[in-house]
Structures are given as structure tokens and as C-alpha cells.
Amino acid sequence: MGHRRSKGGGALSYYITTPIYYVNAEPHLGHAYTTIGADILARHMRQRGEDVFFLTGTDEFGEPVAKAAEEQGVSPRELADRNSERFRALMPKIDASIDFFIRTSDPGHGAKVQEVLQRVHDNGHTYEGTYEGYYCPRCADFKTPTELGPGNTCPIHEIVLELEMEQNWFFRLSAFQEQLEQLYEDDPTFVLPDFRRNEALAFIKGGLQDVSLTRPKLSWGVPAPWDPDQVIYVWFDALLNYYTALSYAREGEDLTDRFWPATLHVMAKDILKFHSVYWPALLLAAGLPLPKGLYVHGYLLMDDKKMSKSLGNVLDPFEVIERFGVDALRFYCFREVSFGQDGSISPAGFEQRYETELANDFGNLASRTLAMIERYRDGTIPAGEVDAALAGGDDGLGDLRVRVCELLDRAEISRGLEACWAAVRRLNRYVEERQPWVLAKGEERSSELDDVLYNLAEGLRVVTLLLAAYMPGTCDKLLAALGVDGRELADLGSRGGGAEVERIPALFPKLEAAE
Ligand SMILES: [Zn+2]
Image (cartoon, rainbow, N blue to C red; front, side, top):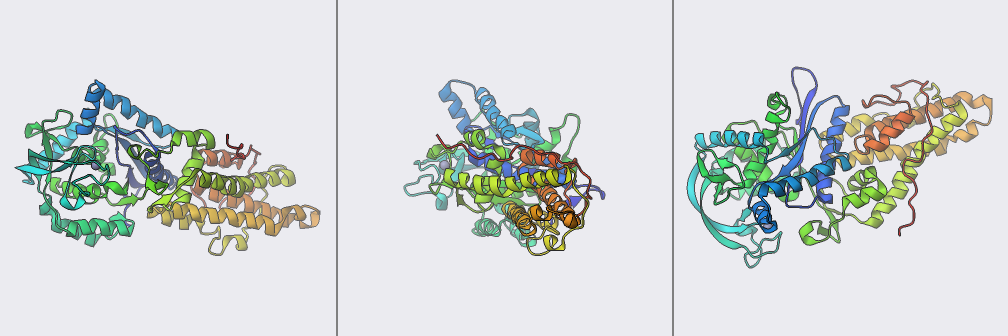
């Protein structure tokens, strides 16, 4: 997909975002999943030398926060401050290498929202009207008749909705019907995966209705600049975070020209409509360039239900990290469930992959490679020739970097990981086939042993550099042990022999029996 572009022949700009998380929720594995997915892409693109900006943050305005604050007897600002901090604290725990954490209550955000929406108003895309519809206070969204569950309920929250009537400013979404259809026609990869694109396009082709842009009677929000009695509907203010953050993320510097339009918005499927329909229409109305693409992922399911606080089946990522380490969590989420699809996860599945893939496949490859170089060559990687048998074939190491880069260009995070894992297994088979311990028995096969050890060290270096985006802490340790300084991606044979290696404790220690 043509999602990246060069600025003046230098590094490509790569601006990636997660949704901003609603402060009323507790951070759970779903938030971690989206953020880790975006982080893998951000880290990978940095390794390719691209000019990366990675944004996450919290969505803080709207009726649900105002109501929760009232119930708790605090101001909405106090509640938002407290809850936003929990999401900020999640970032280092999951090793998310964010460049900025936006809060929609930031003054810089509100000012920029007003500037953009004044332009939408001035361009004639708003009008005053009366809205009547079924409103879910927990979604902060009106439901169209086709979106209502049985008995006028919210299908997500399973609560009965009230018919509400209010005076609003409307956004002329219907005026963008043709332009949106054209956008999807012109850029078939605007929304990935394909089946999500089809969903979005079907929604558009079903006929777009104008939507409320403002809401009256609320004080916790960004006032509409042309009518301060109304505040901007929380979804529009939230969507604009992707654009506003660039204007104030760095003090005294406006990053908008450097990074806008965004390269990729990553999100879960429940907010597809807002991002694939409302968001491009709003930008068109303001005369701003559209993001290059959206990647929509599925849900991690336990007992085949979406994980959420309100459904009471939350798997706590902090507990998982405590016991298995953050890299095991980062690995498992993208290994067990193909990114883009829904899929089931379980503690048993987790432990199995930890043992067989992390401890056995990868951990053993690392420890035996380091151990054999130390034992047979005093800890110095010998010089050698690239082995054509290891380099070639479908799972060959020769074009691994190119294959993984192509997959991650399309945000195919699980398939990229699968390609790396095939290489890990290929290297383990190489050890079994070439039997370095047999070659080491006499001097006469010494140069053959040099070649095998060289290829093992090279193969491990190449695959670990690619895996560093997925499991940064673990790969840093292993790369240091292999005498690798930089994090640029590499091809088999691009480094000669001579580096000193050192032995390190097991990367993924065997599990203690569960209590
Ligand atoms: Zn709802």
C-alpha cells in the first residue's frame, strides 16, 4: 500500500496512532493489544531509518465521564486526571515506545479542535436542527434504527435506550457520500484488511445521514466556537486528536507539516464506522489531507466473548507481565491470533507457546549458538561463507528481511512474526543437520565448523534484529551477547566474522509449576 512517502528525498515519514482510550475504562488487555500492535510497526519502521512519530493517549470529554465524576463526587477534571494516569502508566509496562501521550483535555488540543471546526462551519458544512434518536450514554453515540438491538437496546451494552430530542448543530455528512465512495474506489487499501473495507463501503453505500456535531447542556467538552452554549460531540473532538497532537507535542515546534497526513491509524473493529466514514468526511469538510490508511484489528476472545470490563471477563495484562515478562505477552498476542481476525486466547495456550516456541525454539537456538561459539572458538564468531542451503528456499534466511518488511508495510504483524519463526526453526534444523559437535571432533573439518558457526551466528543476528520490534527487551539482551551494536535490519552475510560473543542466562526460563 502506498502509505509512506519521502520528504525531500530523506527519511520517509511514518506517523502511526492508536485510538485514544476512553478514561472511564480500566486499562485491559484490549488496550494493550492495540498499542503493542502499533508499537511493533513503529519500532520496525525506526529500524528501517524512517522518521517515525507514534501517538497514543486518552479521550476525556463527554457525558459518560461527567456522569461518573458526579457519582464519585469529584470534578470531571479530577476524574480524568486520575484515570488518564492509569493509561499513561500502561505504556512503559508494555514497552510501548510512544512519542507523545495526548489528552483531549490538553489546552492545545481544544484550541486546535476549535480552529478546525470553525473552518468546517465557515465552509458551510454545518446547520442547526433538532435531533431525535436513541442515545446510548455508554457508547456516547446515537444508534440508527438498524444498529438498535431488540427492544431499543444497545447491542454492545445490552441496556434499554431512551429516545432523546435536542437542539444540535449538525454536520452535513450526507454531502460527502460521493467523495467517500470515490476515496474507497481510488484507494482500495485505505482500510485494511479487505473485509473491513467492504464493511465500511457497505455502510457508506447504504446512504449517509447527517449527524450531530454538537450537544447542548454539557459543560465537559470543547465549546463550539460559533455557539459556545454547545460543546463538540465527543467523537469529533476525539478523532481530531490525530491532527491536533502534532501542533503542540513538541514545545516551540509544529510537527504538522512533517507528519500529516498520518500513515496509519490502528484500531479495533468496534470503532470502524467513526474512523472510516466520519473521520475522512470531517477532514474533507475542513479541507485537510486524509490519512493514508486504517488498519482494523479483531478481538482477543476468552470463552469466545470480547474482553471488556462491562462484560466482566478481563484478563489482566499486568498479571501476565508479572509472571511471564512483557515480551512473552507481546509475542503471544500476535502469534496466537492472526492480527486482523478475532481469535481465542487462554492461559493454557499461553503456557504452551511459552514453552515450545519461546523457551525451546528461540531460547535454545540462542543459548546453543552462543555456547558452541564459546566452546569451539573461544567466544569469537569465526569468518565463513554464507551457506546457500540456509539462504535459499521458502523459509530461507537470504531474503528474510525483504519478506518481513513487505509484510509489515501492509501491517501484517502476525505473518511477519510467522516468517521470523520459520527462520528460527530453519536454524534449529540447520544445527541438527550439520551437527557442529561432530565437526568439532577433529582438526580436519575445522573450516567446515567455522562455516556452520558463522552461518548460525549470522542467521541468529538477522532474525533477532527483525524480532526486536516484537520483543525489544529480550532481543536487546541477545543482540548485545552477539556483539551487535546498531539496530538496523540486516541480510545474511552482511557482517563478517570476528565479533566476540558472551553467554547469557536463558532468555525464557522454564516455568515454575503454577500455584
Ligand atoms: Zn452502548
